[in-house]
Amino acid sequence: MSRTLIKNGHLIDPANDIDQLADILVVDGKISAIEAAGTVTSDDVSHVIDASNLTVIPGLVDCCARLREPGLEHKATIKSETIAATNAGITTLCCPPDTDPVIDEPAVVELINQKTVNAGHSRVVTLGALTTGLNGDHLSEMHALQQVGCVGLSNCRNPIENTLILKRAFTYAATFNTRIFIEPDEHWLSIGGCAHEGKIATRLGLKGIPVSAETIAIARALELVTETGASVHFGRLSSAQSVEMISRAKNEHLAVTADVSAHQLHLTEHDVSSFNSACHVTPPLRSQRDQEALRNAITDGTIDAICSDHQPHDIDAKQAPFASTEAGISALETFLPLCLRLSQQTSLSTTEIIKKITSSPANILDINAGALSVGENADICIYDENEDWQLTTNTIYSNGKNTPFLGWNFQGKVKHTIINGALLFSASKAD
Image (cartoon, rainbow, N blue to C red):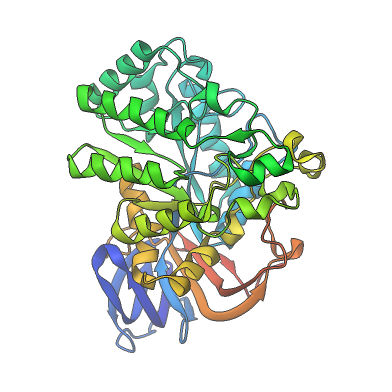
């Protein structure tokens, strides 16, 4: 029987409304006891973690991370990225279906599940394709994908031009009680674009992506939510107008949720001014006003969760003129630090921020994670909120080193990660 004691840590668990010094006893992968600090004895304990002056939280849940496998193993693999996630305190990752082959049949889900088990680090849950091959023409075997474990359905940023097909998808998803995940994008407005449509893109000679590319897609989806009663999650919001639309939808009691990527809360269109390809992301970095609206939406609850939107690339993918580079940031290592920085720069408390990256995304994905409850799996992140460190390529475990945050100084460093009761990362044991 494996018994681990985490003692004297500052436990923050928003799902259970806990914010106190505590001891946590883990027995055979489950949380056996949570008591006041100094009250759980270390008798018969095989391993003790002294969490004095450290913060103990549920393992992070990332509701959007592309792992590149299957299909793009030259960029990254499930093994490399789940190791990086574990080292970053992320115990659960959600993989979108735009892999190769697309996650549109049970066999692909089973392949990803098996590779995740073989890797032996952070767990991976999958979204199934909304349409076959993500081609937007024919609905996928939605119920079969749900039965094999997909936590939702998405067409990613691949267009479904025929609104009748999208309505049928919403109707069937509502029948099966399956959530649809939308990355809002009106294809004909965004195609070929690489930056926010505005003065900076014009000055740089870059084709812009207007805010309307996002809001038109949201408006169409919201109309269908109203008609069908489907439950829909809007991922990676980037604009003030989008926030207003989601807020109105929630006020009308529609079954909608939303997330934002961590980098959108810290970068703006001004960061592309030097043609920094590391800042080429989709949706694009928008205006200061948009960033402020996104931060306010985190504060008032309009945006339910923060995700990493992890997209690792090989070096060549970012070494070209800005418009010709591939979009995306390698974001696992900066996920928690950027969120902690947000609590330092806004009125949000650490507890409120932790909720956005633990229990809230777990609820969106409808999985048993993001909380520390007696009798449940012990998925735990322990970090030092006071440790200062600098992001360098040597501190990035992901195969992708493509990030605009290289050289940034952060406060808050993961020290231990426990998954299913097993200590899979410890800073003292790190390579």
